[in-house]
Length: 402
Ligand SMILES: [Zn+2]
Image (cartoon, rainbow, N blue to C red; front, side, top):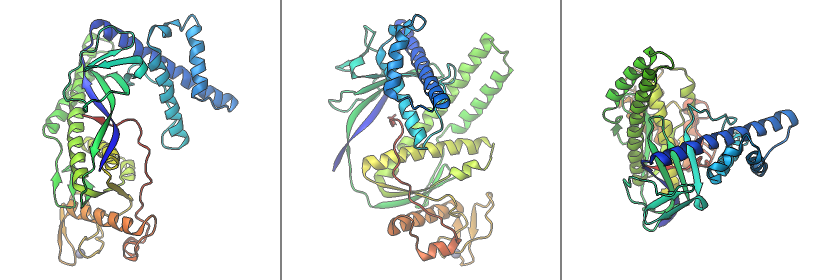
């Protein structure tokens, strides 16, 4: 079976001075329009309890363009400005559906600089992409081919904190859904990034430790520089570059990993770690591994959909570490430093492999019983409800293939 999916392909590009200038202006206008529309919607709601929808903000934009002080909005392509209003609409829809917090203003320094172009605002022909208001195509590094005969429906241009330019092309792609029979439970760890119920341990990407030390050093240097000085700006760019490298490598690693897990297994069971994150822990390693875990979950969520697999998320209260996967007895305490333990039944466990095995068993029982119904054995183990199947989630944003 094959399935057509919308998939984003992201590449670096090197703009000419003119193009960089045009894009920087467009980013500025996108931010301005987004912020003004957000303010208008917020005021309408707080002062008059009125809901302002996308069409109303679109009419506002037309009005703003006619004023003298905002006439500069006419100088850039109108499509990214309209798209900014659509993004704001999505942000509000997610807020009302309780999937996200109230939208916040885009900051000049901290927010992602990006602009989205739909088909009327770009031309794509023979591997050459030209954006509205530009005469020359972008100089794109085609690090991998687009799908055969693909024509992008949306193009997003962005610049990261390290100053690098990216273009992301949304295309239709066909995924071959090859059946798989495996089922795997995954435990998120600290020593190893993940432990699988098969006993396999997956480590963090190589170099990550060294990169992290480099990042800490760059951050210390930045802290010593005088505010507003040229050296401080240089130090900030250095921090951004190291940071970009860490996140790039990590994303690459997680993409390969999630694709492999989804190809090999029909059922993947993970633990919901939301509450674990609420336990305050300022340890850098913990924060980093939690971020990786969230990212992996997002990748798994859309890839199981692409490949026709099942992802089961078991409840965070489920005592996966303390439960003997052989006999079901519950150990009393299991401090973090205990890496392996022996149950009263005589079975010796690797802590993480045992936990992953329990997560798998829990997930499979959730599938067997359907929503909310639990087998007797499970509830007698813990005395509390410990499993649920996540409702299908709306995929926010567009997954990016790297
Ligand atoms: Zn046991």
